[in-house]
Length: 368
Image (cartoon, rainbow, N blue to C red; front, side, top):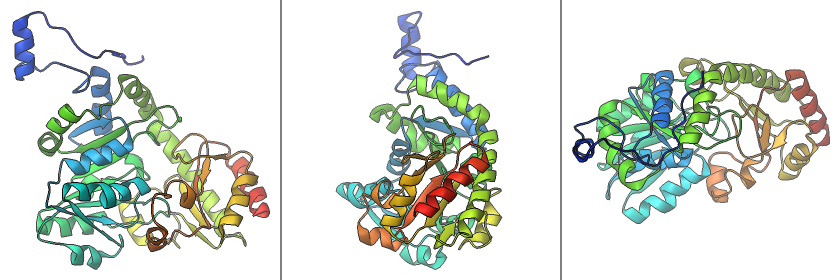
């Protein structure tokens, strides 16, 4: 009932002629686990089915997937447009890493469609966006942004980690590439790291086949095996987590000590109309503002059931202070550009009893 686990680095051949044919691409078998592995391939095929993608290539982590997705589509002299609301390491890639290789990047307000159009240059090749975005759950209109990209022949990469394939299908909305940190909801148990890049077979092969082969961002076969088991319960977990998150978002929004609460399933979300159009559920993340770093820390430290962790998408509920953890690499100016002040807290809702989570949050809010 459990899939086979191929913990092997390399493969053997019946003859020298067989090895010759395999390396020449005439025999469609495995060569080396850096290029491909049967267990990893099982994970890629099943995630592609869940996403509705023709092809998937797995990587060692979510950031490896983002790096691969970008690198395969850009060259020196190219230009990338991204939403300002990105995970801190993604901003670092665009602001600090890409310029070393002659690639420029412009960050825009993600929901502002005219801003995407105004940022276009003759050498713009890629649009990169998260939606919902980390950490304040900003929503970008994937279909509208993809339409702008198509006008200039640019490719669209969407980080779909917060929505998961359960609640959002970027490829159906016009995206070219979908990226995941499989470390999050796909594993769902805080065990292993992994990532994935998905899209049409022709684009995946053209942009990423040789890059994967020669740079080696390979996913461990053991991690792929764990992620395979996570996929089996992904839909069940995410729907349950989303239902609880919606309940807790209402509790937080109504509390006197909460200045602002963001949840894609609530009608008061700044991009509620877009969320309703392109998402079928609100997801497991809630963000809320307690007004100051001190209040946020008091709240976080008073929690008993909810763990303090910078991860998300786990079966266990987790809370983090983005300004000092996940988005610490961003400058203060960059954080303020996306509205991330020191009072914001990000909650990843797990599978615990909703009433227990509500009680824990209620007690901690009093401490805040």
